[in-house]
Image 1: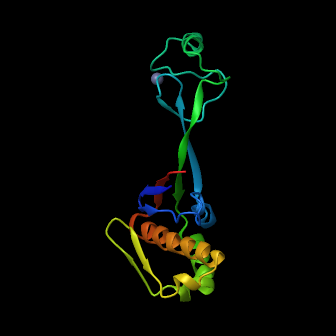
Image 2 (image 1 turned 180 degrees about the horizontal axis):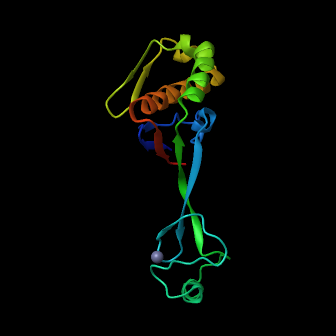
Image 3 (image 1 turned 135 degrees about the vertical axis):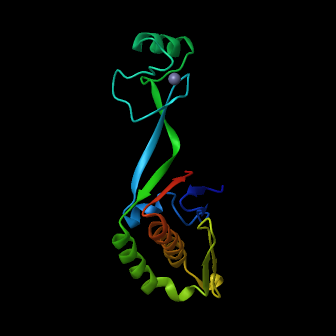
Length: 162
Ligand SMILES: [Zn+2]
């Protein structure tokens, strides 16, 4: 299954190698998204007793509609798949990149970023790499993207499929 990410940076997580929360390693803040049952409106992480004020008159109305629909959950809302990640601290990102460069930087023969900050990486030694090296390499590639985004826009915000 391909998991993409898009926003300030764009790309695809490495299948079977890279977690979709890999950016946490560079100091990312993870933002989860929530939706209300039935109307599917967006909401911040809701607290007890919250309901969709756009679509329902009261908590009881919303709850009654949910129960009539037969949704068996003790909540009005659900967590959406995927998450958003936000990074603003370039120093943390560059520090981490520096460590990764020492570990696996030599495995990269070329790395380019296009206008959408999508990267292309080439290596001469894919078949000799250990799984651990691949994991770190995937992270390094992501880190370089993130750093480029912060340098360009002052921040890096992207949505990641999980
Ligand atoms: Zn609604």
